[in-house]
Length: 269
Image (tube, rainbow, N blue to C red; front, side, top):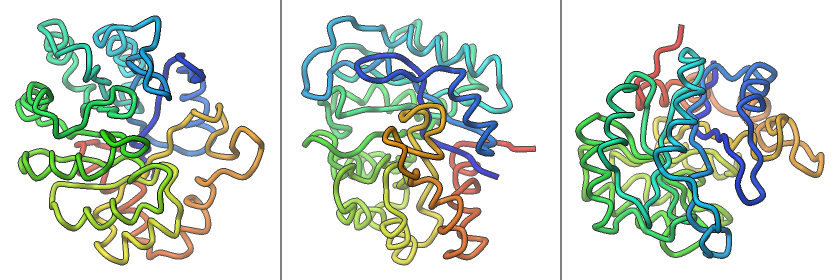
């Protein structure tokens, strides 16, 4: 079994990720369940400039819910929060409460908001996460606000919530993020664009219970699990094949689905 904890839909900037791409890739590459967020809620572009046409937090959430409503046995929703320009309002709470069985966590993207997870302005989000028992899933890497240390500080300040460091500091050697994993019991990492060697380092240091499988699919197209945009073999083929041969069956299953099932309350048949 495989649970992918980091999947997207939406069209914005240079991202074009359709619901059809998600469903095709899951079927083609044996993904049993995906946690999906909508990139259309991004506030800033890659250079930190405001995106000219903004999609509201609630509208982005509705699109994610529509996919989960259609495929509740395969898709879970992660509402993407607009950290800079919006707060969760009554309509957000209404959407969450009416669709609670389809919502598995809350998505933060400090890089596309330039707001750090330990910023006091996020307390309203953490109150919702606490009230509805939802893990926090956050991008890390690319700017100061998105450094893993800020998510670590948020985790330490909210020990009753669970936090996932997506990418474990994208574009780095991941060593700072890996070090932080052991400093907070409620902090986890994911494999999205993380080398197998770095994941092995984290497993050796802290055990396989600290890592979740994630991919960013279908960021490189419907066949992200197979190859990147230039046609080179995908990193995730290493996780499906070589990685499986390196670690124990228990460690492999922990990372590929058991940890996610436990953390997010996903029930697979």
